[in-house]
Length: 416
View (cartoon, rainbow, N blue to C red):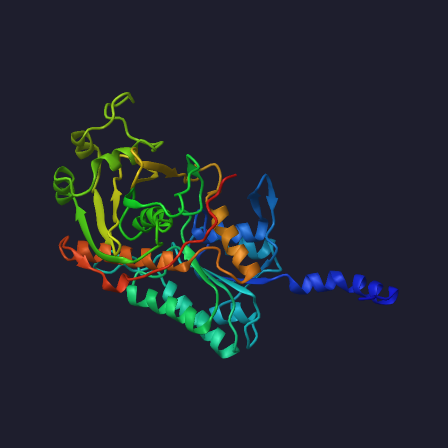
């Protein structure tokens, strides 16, 4: 093909404007924007950039609009609006997506429905309005006759039926949909990936925190590893939760493998010493009974027979540790999902950087960086765990969690 000098010069003159027109516009729909909130960690990275691959990375897109549902004391919304006038704050979700017009005017949406003052139900679940926000976003998609990629922070909803509806709606309307927490994408120590096609027999996460808040993190820790097993994910058939005295009874009876508990705890950087002031003795079961506050376990079975266990042991550790039994390997396969929390001197929680980076990639390519089915499954497991506890710690059958999918071929956790 021959190009004239005039055509070449004309193209060069228009190139900067073409680049400017193709820079994606992102809308943020969040519950609250205050220090250490998930909203702050996402919004600030899109506005100010973040450390990535040894340099300061600025997203190749612009956060142009924001809807913030609650404005408590310490609200950062006025400050961010004043410092970044190109980002406008709107009173409704629809206006944030249409930029005050009548049709969808952005190229991607961040839905951050975590933190804020929302009611709790009698099962102990915080009723964060992720589903309600999602419905408002979809209304704009439908009235505009087009849709754009959507990223949802953490699990899809506290309500399983709503979570399934969100997934099905994304498939029906055909828009790229991602979700989940930082655990699958943060650093690992040691930096290990589950071998593709591994014959996993048993998998476990030993971590800390409460029900319907941190259990989703522990479940995602395990799921991002076991989904890489031979055959991929097959879904989960049942779940049984244990708490308090029932937890210790199950532990003593060997309901879950204690060698994997110990392998996971050996990866912890925060293990509470069995003797105050000493770190030379690994805690015994009696020590754990003395140290741990309100222990919880979810024991569940995948359709292909792989067993999974989530163990919450607040007081003993404050990190997320994974262990698995793989056929043909003598020793347990184990690692820690490293999640260094802000220490009060900085608002940074660097494990949000790979989460934001994954959302960026989807906004740029139109393809999810990793499967949303992972979070659909862990959302269902979280709800099943809560339900089992609510029913007096009885086993819950989960035929609705017959969720099959394949993982990405490439690893998506952070290595820098």
